[in-house]
Image (cartoon, rainbow, N blue to C red; front, side, top):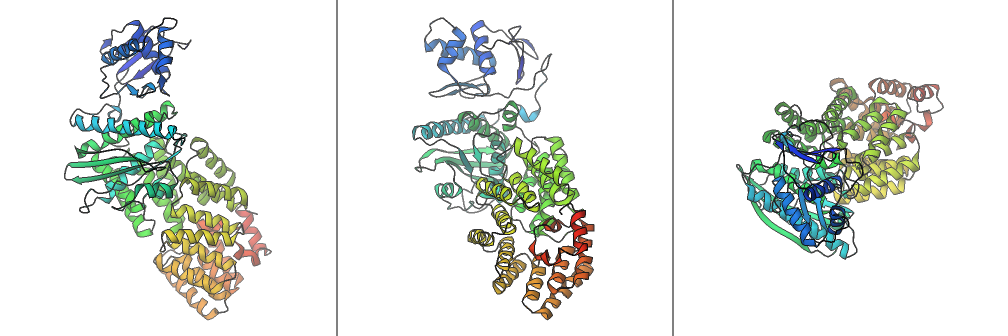
Length: 614
């Protein structure tokens, strides 16, 4: 036993006092015998791991020689004392062949009678109990089998993927629910450091009805895949699920379950908690609490949030605007919905680089939403990563931005988003090798994400490794040949390689697939100017200026066409406007080789100095 027994622990409606050797609830003291108390205290003090039976026997009975049956009987008595059962464990779970683990979240120490837990942490309601119990037990058994089998086969589980839950029948489909079920489980299971969980951006493309889960696992580079199906009809939900070991394709468990729609939150709680327990993840108490944390209990707010995530995942401006609308609707129903604020922040941030919007009209809103999310949930890594991005793109305080990015990575080294943001900062500062290393790590964590792969191409491009950047865009377009950002970076790489006709073709595809993004349009004008087709370049310039008279066009893009035409005075006029607007693309000033002919000019030197990029 631990020598310091002065600590008090709270779990559920119980308070355990190690110094006074008492167990109580809000209703008063609970009768508990010595051995049972010792067993409970030892399990609580070692709640971060599965405690082997032999260790428990040595700790509780010390020098007394007892049989395993004594432990079994004492565990049974403990469960009765706590109102727990082996079939529906809320406090002590049996891990077959290994031992026991205390699984209830421990709230911070505090004196006095414990207050009731908030609704999000209360045990599941008894309605639909059979379904909750069945799914939890099967999830636990499956994960234990994965863990044990992988160890036996010499393949430790280091990475897992939760695929989008597919429909049981082709029609009707609820794409938001299918994607959202996976998204919720990914978020909850991504708290620890032991196992990497692939982000939604990598797994979302595996939503096809005929998707081969094992093939998806191989492409994602994971050891195990959670593959499920879900259908909602009115207030009823039907779920089927199976866990597959990627190494040999073994199906480790499977089943079909029916529940009311309101039961979906408890299903998610059970799966997340039991997966973590079965995999013996080394989680802090805060991380364990997050496994069953519910950001909202409002079913309609949750549905609206799922719709927001679905539209955001398409990564084109019209869909992003739609996602903003859904996140706002979710927040109108639940103003304390941290995940909805985080989604809103990501959407506003995405607009700054993918759409023709004034940075002041989107990035401060993104930062405000992210900070609100963090006020509600300080450990929400998605919001932390957004703050890191905005520190780079809008604040232009490079030391502070680096500190912010490092802070996120210290708390969550498996955040692909944070590695992406840090790589962009390092690239902007000309620290190319560090930038490439961070971009590569981001891609390793999120291997099938179009944006993450495009970011690596961006970093390689500005590090002077244009051929490698071109090869990276080949891989992206093999995943989605209409992804306009890949065509944009491909054009830039071809431009650096002096392949002007090919670059022009790539920029035209970027313009078409983005519905006329002005950056793609401006690079067409720039390339035409370099190709000696100045009349055509002037036509593009006139079109951009006409558009700017009626709607916002990033000044950087107009400056680029003037730069290609060799009109220095106009180029600097528009660069100054870009500086006044805090144009995101101006952060590339130090590394963008298209500005090289202007660098000796005092006006360029002044601009770089103002941005602290000299």
